[in-house]
Amino acid sequence: MKIALIGYGKMGKEIEKVARSRGHEIVCIIDINNQEDFESEAFKSADVAIEFTNPMVAYSNYMKAFKADVKLVSGSTGWMTEHGEEIKKLCTEGGKTLFWSSNFSLGVTIFSAVNKYLAKIMNQFPNYDVTMSETHHIHKLDAPSGTAITLAEGILQNMDRKDKWVKGTFAAPDGSISGTNDCAPNELPIASIREGEVFGLHTIRYESDVDSITLTHDAKSRGGFVLGAVLAAEYTAQHEGFLGMSDLFPFLND
Image 1 (cartoon, rainbow, N blue to C red):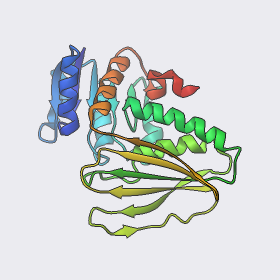
Image 2 (image 1 turned 180 degrees about the horizontal axis):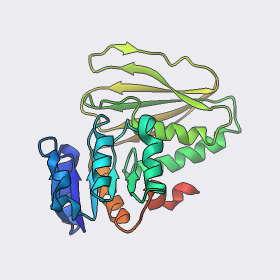
Image 3 (image 1 turned 90 degrees about the vertical axis):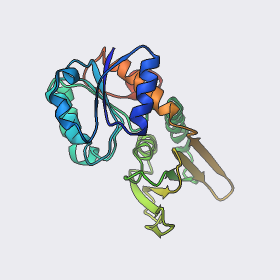
Image 4 (image 1 turned 180 degrees about the vertical axis):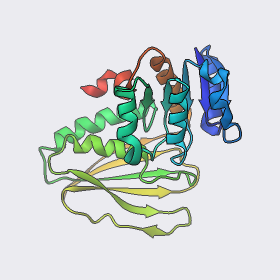
């Protein structure tokens, strides 16, 4: 398979290694200094492009890839609120293809399925309140993380007493704390922490007067994200539309 890389930071370099190890060819690498290569024949020859950049440029990258008629896999977050419906429509009605996930890790995929199942059970026990926290490295720009939002949405879909997530406390890299986790009974607060070089730590906590139940995923490296992104690219090369982890792993639909 011919793969183009959009973004050549730590994730891009790791994806390159894994893709080559699985027998794929990297035909084009686009970073901040060679944006004109979106119009190159090398980029247009790709079966799929893998994009890991940042919230400020993700949407622009999507539009450039779509213009070149190249299928896209992306893990960039922060663009959904403003451009989500437009991008989905381009894929469902406009003939474009995007496989998007807030997190490509197989472990997080399993964690997400367990999260939904647990929320479905806890829907029967209103004496438990649910909160969430996420911790990431100091370089991460968006908060809450895209993964935390996806997990929160999984809870909201399965719990009648919660109908929206809200930003909770934010612990900044300098140690300052802003915001609050106090919210209305129908709201699910997400607390965010930015410290060190943490790859990703997500915790969901159900608390009652007598006990608590905690569900945690702790990423040890980028390896899980990288392999998942390449597996998604292999899937996307053979499929079309607005795709996600529930397409690649149907057990998420159970």
